[in-house]
Length: 110
Length: 110
Image 1 (cartoon, each protein chain N blue to C red):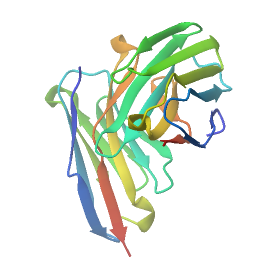
Image 2 (image 1 turned 90 degrees about the vertical axis):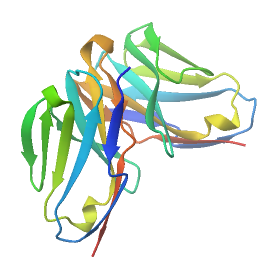
Image 3 (image 1 turned 90 degrees about the horizontal axis):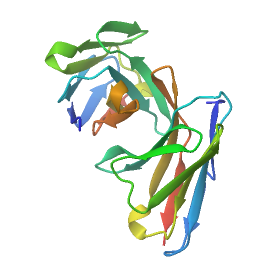
């Protein structure tokens, strides 16, 4: 979708290194979300934001932090990557109450 | 939190067949959404359906909020319908967060 982009699309990193994933939106939506998708678990919420500098935890927030210093960008940081954080990460925005997802970031921690 | 369960987990269809996917949720929700994840991993919003019935081409969805379930109907299935179908429940009071079911993996054979 043209309104939301994620970067990078793919990343391989080593255990113990910090990693930051970026979600960028162009449509001034208040709410932004980070989900991870793993086989057998569907999509699970990591963190979400309801405005600049306003964030809250989701169900699988341990090991992750987020920041939102401006409306258009929502950053997800793995402070010290572990193999259990190998996953596909999706960012989402809401259009009204309907969601739009980014294309995902495939992260592999070796 | 809300629990969302989908059935069946897997479905194999012959092209042209009809099918019904089911989504049960544990609590009253403000909204129920259906998504299709295509074989390339992209998540597409199909329906935003808190109650009632909606149709979009060969797909339709019905949510019976009082009985806490939603159904997705695929008619005259095509190979392009293959992928994973997710339902997700949403509560406005909980930051519009989506809680996903585990998905139904659909394979349509030519």
